[in-house]
Length: 394
Ligand code: PHB
Image (cartoon, rainbow, N blue to C red; front, side):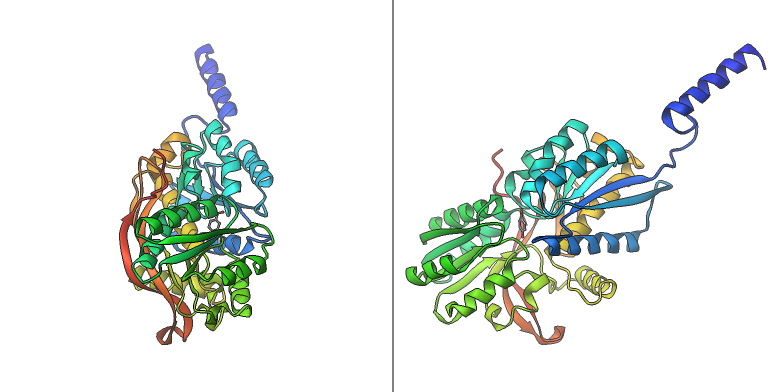
């Protein structure tokens, strides 16, 4: 071997050793997606829904992008922010994931935001819905919704439908504060009056004391936001205390009349008017196909808005990875911005400026639907098109 060829060979093997692959070969290493969800604890239904949706997306769209295998690494954080952060750190440093997704509740997304910024790893929020989350890091993209986005519609509907005096009841943390604030401002702008603002703890809430206050205050309506998973327990106590027959109207965000629990809530939920971005009964061909496939793959489980956030999150990630051929970092983030597509919920846009989702918000009423097995569903009867998050401060 000549000295020149020997030099070349050594140089190439050094490059190969450094990068783990020959320098001239295409990258065939797996593309890793870190998925952090609450699979246990109070928010486990969110984890179960999103995990099922991610699996459905992969079953329908395969696990190959640019000739590389896509691997989803699922880890349970139990909705505990310190755990989320630790898991995210491991995924970034050890697994070298291209993107981290999931985030069942707001505190887990906020705890992880600084890591996304430091490591330039895109973070796709599929569930958490406090407005400010996308402002916590320029690497955060959201495919769920925000509370301000869905709350204004029900406040407006209430004021225009003979509800003059309302009490608000929200979970005592980020998304609850957003719901309380935006219900209050829109309802008062429309001429309504807020008689009381009640809050219940995020963990292990007891609704009895606040429901007694509502009975004593006698508003025309009670507006409620509680995170997904708490709706059934709330409804049960609402009925047990006779509030369903008290003449006090229940209005809510769709988190309370969640498709995951709605079928088992019983007649107390009938007639509850609420606003949200997704109903399993949304009458589009895309949604029918989604619901059927989801139920077929999950022993009949009905997808809720969390599942759709997960499904659409995978869409955003896949399309972006196709654009970058599996590369992560800022290129991947940029490829997520501006995506427009037809979701099971309706048309959506990932706003290039805010990285938040723009979507239709529906006003719905809980009804029995004979054509859908006589089950309880949120039946859409009005829509506000292309709603941007009204909660952004800039
Ligand atoms: C949140 O923690 O941001 C959250 C969780 C569940 C919801 C809405 C918001 O249904």
